[in-house]
Image 1 (tube, rainbow, N blue to C red):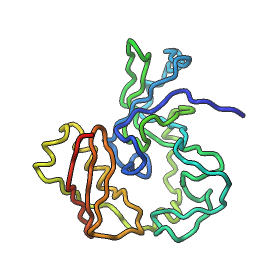
Image 2: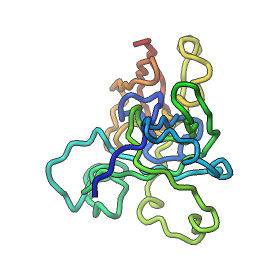
Image 3: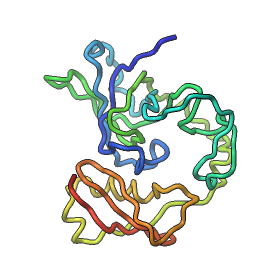
Image 4: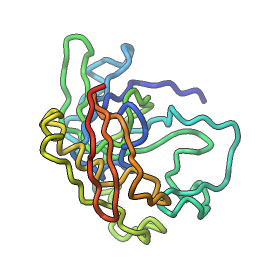
Length: 225
């Protein structure tokens, strides 16, 4: 079966580093789904406005792998423990497909791009290909007594985020909450603990640099690209 993108995601994250590891972890991270010209047909979205959330099937477009590995090393398990690939949400899979549940904020009809979807809780980098959209059905998709496997047993890696006032003034105020949420999830691999190391990633038109000491993450520099 051959599949092709029906559209692409637009977000403030041009690279993978800095993104939350799962959808819904950072509810303020916004994304826009722009459809390919052949799918910019309003009738294809008829009825979708009645749903609050959608499933997005998308591709790990930046992953390059030549062979299949039956096990992977989840970063949140320290980077050394191997688990079966099908027991994880690792991006290194036989088929580089991903699934995210996002909140549908609104459907906007534009003059140049047709109808676009505004979504929140995104975990995708800019220009991510989208292959399909399905409505989230709360009476079916929400399983209240489901088990979460090892994902419910791992340490809480969230950090307290400190952005000095002089650095806050350098960034668009509308992006502050989104940035704080992303940083609070601690983008670093969990097996790295170096309080003197400076990490960095790109966010919107900015380069964000930070350090981590225990449970405190401090932004040390914000530069415009």
